Every structure is written in C-alpha cells, then in structure tokens.
Image 1 (cartoon, rainbow, N blue to C red):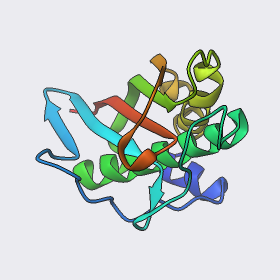
Image 2: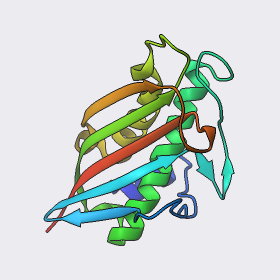
Image 3: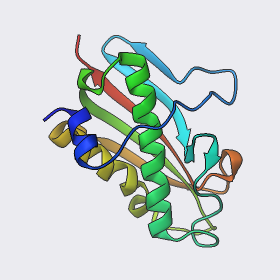
Image 4: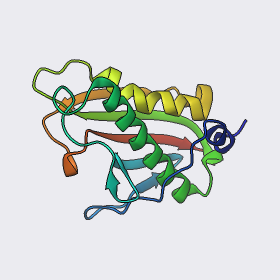
Length: 153
C-alpha cells in the first residue's frame, strides 16, 4: 500500500502547506536527502495546541500536537516531491516539546509524530530520533518537528 493510500485509510488528509515564518524555505534537497524545516502545530493558519506540556497541555495533547506537526511536514514533503511515494525512508526526526522545567517525558510526546510516520510509511517510517524539552517555541506552539527523508533517485 502506498503512503497516500495509508493516509486515506487512516482518515487523514494533508493540510494546506504552511507559510514560512522567516527567511528560509520549507525543504532543501541535497543528493537523495530531503531536509524539512521545523513545523509547528498549526492547521490552516490556526494553532491547534499552544502552551507548555505540564502546564496548559498534557502528554496526550502534546502527542496530538506532534502528530499535527508531522502532518505539516508530510505536506511539505509532498509539495517538494509531488508524491509521498517518492520517500524511500524516514531517516531522522528531531522533536521539540514546549514544556515546564524538569519535564522528562518528551519521548512520549514526540511519539505522536513517530507513530504517524510509521503508520504512513510502514517499516520505512522507522527512524532515528531526538526528543527534547525546551522552554518555548514559535507562536507558543506545544511542539515542533523537523524531519529528514531519503528519496528515490
């Protein structure tokens, strides 16, 4: 089954590509690797989750936020390549969690992105990862996710 078909099976549609919020581009390709800029949890210009996990957000709502970030990254990947079918492997995910000091459950939050990528790409969705708690993110987003994928030649 193709990644696009898996998305449909999951009942998901990719959102409108978010606009860059600064002097950068959403993706950069070098060789067979596509580096995606960090994406936050906004859909159609509106934030879905704001605030810190451990204060305004829970681990579960943080998980949901990371899932939205991954959907935005998939939108940028499809915009850059024409189809998610061009992805041969998800290589790396870097996840940032806006959290209270001492928060130690960042991996559980960023699983929202990782679980979605595995659901969409199967074995090729399994990746190396960093999950880091930080004291703030753009627009007070609860999470931010950066993804690197390998593309078919």
